[in-house]
Length: 231
Image (cartoon, rainbow, N blue to C red):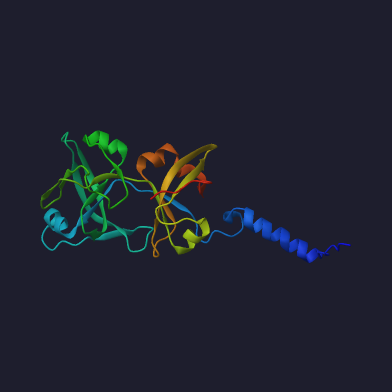
């Protein structure tokens, strides 16, 4: 004669809880550790120390006028003019600090059309085999043979964010923006991990205008279900 094991109500409750924890998405089970901030990254330039001195004079240093959302980064007082192949000019392009090892100019798609530059979409810092331009400052001129890009849309994440969203550096996510009853989803945001950053999405000016970001009522990051994330 077989016997049937008895299960107490407490055991049943624990079994149900374990099943829910296994199958529900992590975002529904824990509170998001950091607020999601979505900012428009307008056209700007990052300068090497060498090019800073050429453009603004020997011994020139970047002069911060506004801190950016990410710790340690700032908008500088200095601006440069960007000249493209069509000899059209974008004046007063803001320089961001601190200085980098290599000069890089980040423009929006419509900026590239205006200047006559076919902008490649690149992760910041990945500037091999990219087009160049001419930079003009009050003290001199720099002719870049590469370094002009359209920055790939991306999300900065720290350790708590990586754990919460269950992603890793180089993965892809979607960004959904609700604004005035109109919803826009940007796919394939690049996840960029650094232990010292704040959770922040960067879109360029064209993307921000397209989704009416200034009037957004809700923003959310979505991990594509079942996708094989590629680096």
